[in-house]
Image (cartoon, rainbow, N blue to C red; front, top):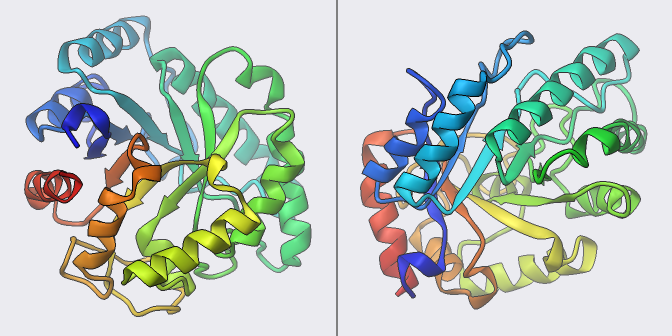
Length: 283
C-alpha cells in the first residue's frame, strides 16, 4: 500500500492562519489533516474571510493533502434537555457548517451530545431533531457530518454503537451523515480492539448496529486508561493500554484502505514518527 492509497494525518493547528494547518500537514508527510476552524472552547467565532478561504484551498492543492476534516466546538450539546442550551448549540453548529463549506472541508466530526439528567433515549431523540434542522444549510456545500464514537464519560451518549445507529437511521435520508471511529474512545467504552480477534468482534458489532458503509474516518489514538474505564484519555501509539497490534490490524485491513486516519495523540513531536509507523504497517 502506498501513501496515495490511504489518508493518514494529524490534528494540526490553525495558529497564524487556517491555511497554515495544511503546510504543517505537509511537513509531517501527511495527506490528511483535521483542524478546529475556530476556538473550540468559545461560543463566539469569526467567520472565515474570503482571503483565508482562498489561501486554504490553494494550500490544499499545493500540499497534496487528500482529506480535510474539522472537529466541532466542544461546548456544543445537541442533546441537551435545556432549550436555551440547544439554541446556542444549534447556532454554533450552524456557523461551523458555514465555515466548513467555505473551506470546502470534507468531514465535520462532532460529539453527539450529553443527556445531562435526561434519559439517553430522550437525548438521542433531541439530537435527531436538531440535526434535521441543518438540512437546508448542509445542501449548500459538500461537507458530511460524522458522529464521533465516545468513551461514555459523564452523561455523553455515543459510547454504544446502538446509539449512533439509532441516530443515523433517523436522519440518513435527510442529511449527509456518517461515523468517525475513535480507537481510544471505543476501547474506553468497552470494545476490546487490542487483538485481531477483538477487532473482528468489534467490527461485527459495528456492522450489525451501524453498518460499515456508514464508517468514513478514524481517530487513531492509544489510551491512557483501561478497557471499559469510560474515560477519554488519549495516549501516543504503543505507549498506552491498547498497544500496537491494534494499529497494525487497522492499517492492514482492506476495508479501511481509503478511510482517513487522523492522529490526536498528545505528544505532537511524535506525530511524524507515528505517521511513518502507520505507513509501515500499511505496506
